[in-house]
Length: 427
Image (cartoon, rainbow, N blue to C red; front, side):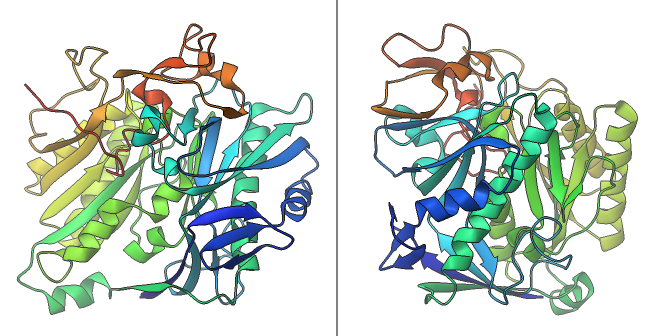
């Protein structure tokens, strides 16, 4: 399977009379883009804002982040949502590299987060470094929360594809190629290399705690095997309203650093067998079922080692422990990647579960670490929503606009696929 990512570098974003990219600047026809999103009549209000790195801007609450992409054959993107059902990971994809669509809306009482474009909070989120087109959308009165989540999620996807489609025909600044054969073919080419599989755990717990694979909710599904290219090319979409620090946004799925790192070592240090997107159930039987099926897939492929990344914390810690235990007991070496909820002083038990088989642990940071973020000159969204977000409280927002928050209120601050800047030192 061969995938080409044709990347156009975006260094700035501005309003324009047409949507196009010229000399590193993405120009957005604001009214046309607003009208396009407003075709969804369940929105009462739709607006777009721009937020650039270094600006004194806060965006709150952020629902999802999506990189503008489109298949260059004109078939759209995100099959199951905005493209005919087909397999991802092949052909040519246009990427507006450095741009992001952030969706923002008052889905409060659920767990979202914020992005600061400058100041101390900006250090902890990748979206302080992207050129952001912020979609602010409010629902019509009495729309159910799950319906609002759905239309806002799909609006973010639609806007991202809309922007990329308008730039078809523009020359790419770089082309990245990802090519790998089937597991059988790669085993024949690299018989002496250790065979490694990646188990990517996903929030799949319903009630706005969802992840989608090819447009289908993963919650009632079973673990399956994907070619790495599928992950890098839009097969997975976030539908999560969970703690902001460690939710995998849709942007993160196509930028999964575990996939990228394993790909870079494939054929040199290891044989990368593939990716298993797996569930985090709300019931014990579901957790056991998923972990046992993850093991079965790995054994049938002859895996020698496995990388496991968690999403979320709390009850998913049990899924993480079950996966590590089952793999280790079967003789498959495991490394887990997770954040920690160790309290504001870092002294509490980090996970809600434990198992002695978990001997290789990569920490992406303590979600409870406290910090003060200063007031911003411009706030996009609803700053008062910090009272309802994980990592925030009623007293978080101060009179001067500054906020006292836990790390977990910042989008992707402790991303458990490793796309972040922090970790924990065990003492």
